[in-house]
Length: 289
Length: 309
Image (cartoon, rainbow over all chains, first blue to last red; front, side, top):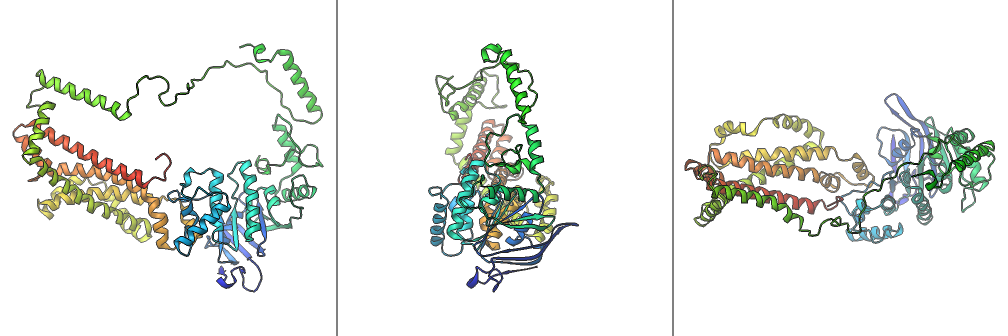
């Protein structure tokens, strides 16, 4: 495996001369005799927002860890920028360091400059005033925003998001989606968002990939006019297509969900081809039934 | 409580079910509703807007003072027992006699002298034993080789009672100060080692991963992540170590010493001076409490980040 970090001069280019932020070819990862990744090819252009979807256990987090440089046993050719940040599913803030110290952890440059950059990043995620707080006093959403600030303060050319909203409640998740969109518009890093939430992928990404049986089985542009609304027919069509690729038969799952529920769907957010289909606000919970 | 009171009469329930059947006919979901028996409701105990005292007590003394009531009662009982002659003074001197003896011992210099001798031994024992245990723990927690070389040995030696080492230590080191301090050093190093190395080894691997992601080098990783992460474990070890240090001091001083609280008590034993013995016991207790208080203070200062501190 060769992880060639780009030189500082062209840090936006993972593989110098290719004009890409990520170039991964033939990525293979086996655990014992189980091959989780069997030749994944993924390219990201600078500033591109790509969502990587997959069922649980499909290896999407394994792939993200490979791009982060956290996996030394992975095989294949992987080119990523030197300036890359990761946001994990858990905020992973050091509990013994203040919020500000967490944000600037490992940041090069003088203490004062780092602190100033850290304060600015915290302001950007709306955490001004929490600089000196202990992480354990933050709410789940606040902690994850601090983790986002920690990722952004490094001015990454590649931002790796590993299901960063998975543990948040639905309302907080909506606000985090808006924040991520805003931060992406402002900083324009290439983003790889690993998620199993199809709606999240369509709301945020320029392109959606589906990882099935250790390889990319679908690579589709998200062409839904912004602001992206769940009731937009283009949104609905793409959702159906992605869910089908993930092995979720919407009609069948819908009927089964209805069997188990006493109350009818409280709202319909899309003109619906199948009358039995319930709201797909949470495809995650449905597919796990 | 009747169905009527809750607003569910039998008829309306039936119509509700009929409606459910109707819904099913047009494809809406339903499940056969079981008959709705109204449960008996109990009032839960709730506050009356005075959360601090629970609204029960008229007088509220500080908790620390309240806790002293038992101690005061015990001492009063002890004094009475001594005064009415239930307790002979050669068995156990009464509190007033003990206080007088303590004052005398303080004034004639015996107690300050003994105190300095004992505190010095414990200070040396902790001062050497804590760093020794910490360094061993770091060596074993931070490197595979260190772990292989140190951990198995320490885990084995841990089960040798330190007091049983005394004959060997006397052969090696004689009966002077060195042997007493050495015993304390050994006794202190073990709890420090065990708790600190365990804390390092069980540190959430996610934090190390984070250190890697944000580009910490090894030295920064140890300083910013491993050491602060191991601090709670180290402080647990320190509290145990402080208790063990006093325990071993008592033992070392009563066997062979020419100074210290234990020596003072051993000499008093020869003359049946139970008042002096009790003064020694009280001194040990106070010193133990002070040491424990110091470690607790350190915990509060150093672990401010932990919720509930």
